[in-house]
Length: 124
Image 1 (tube, rainbow, N blue to C red):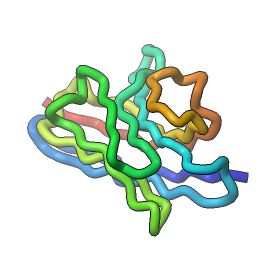
Image 2 (image 1 turned 135 degrees about the vertical axis):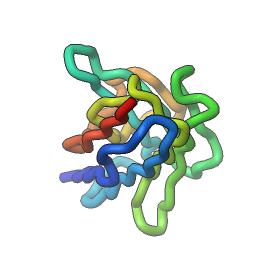
Image 3 (image 1 turned 120 degrees about the vertical axis):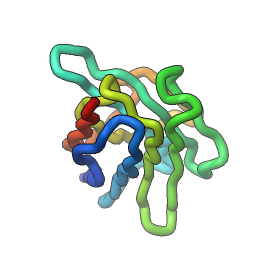
């Protein structure tokens, strides 16, 4: 059983920064790529960013480009999402997820394992 546990969410003012972490444990498929998604109240869950197994390839939603950075540390089975220049519209529950695909994807259906989410609230 795979467990993904997010942390690092909280309340921050617009323009501020947060770093989210996702700790993975248990058995999973080989070399999983990891993704971050978010879901705001009343909206569908949307893709934010993804990182390859090696960490050398990343993929971002347009809303995240230039402000967010995804990375991973395979030695500690942890994935990070550094979020800078936060805006009120970034307010959402943020989820990490794991996919067995060898290429990065923004499709929710391609991710097999999900964390429980961490709340990010950006005040104006």
